Picture 1 (cartoon, rainbow, N blue to C red):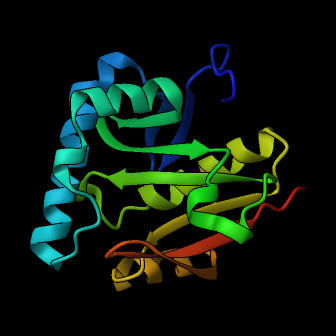
Picture 2: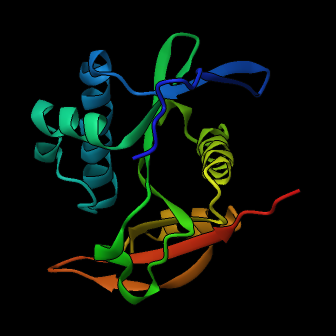
Length: 182
């Protein structure tokens, strides 16, 4: 895991509003749990897709997630609008395609009321800059293969399909985007 203790929160503009992205802290647990549980329920109820089971997002699970991963939260006008992590190892999904010259985006979520406002795209750009700052050349992620809207979204963000992982009762499509250094 990368040491983030000396990193200051990042502040950037999104549609003329300031969005703050910073490393998640234990005191964020309640809000982070609510965000993930609501997203899991929405995906299942509106699209019939079981991408995440809301029972997964227990306080113990999320506390471990925050303590052991590079987890980031984003606030817009004091409201939690999203969360995601960057992992440096993800061999269990990527298999033979895995390499360590990438950062792997995991559990990216945006508060539903902000859908379509560019927050997901902003997260990907921010994560790309973060991954690049760690000397890596690729941004990678996976998403449920049976979620056509999400797959199309990632393609529209310049990610390229790399393959498919088939788990027990579920499948994930694998995407990557090369980080261009200027």
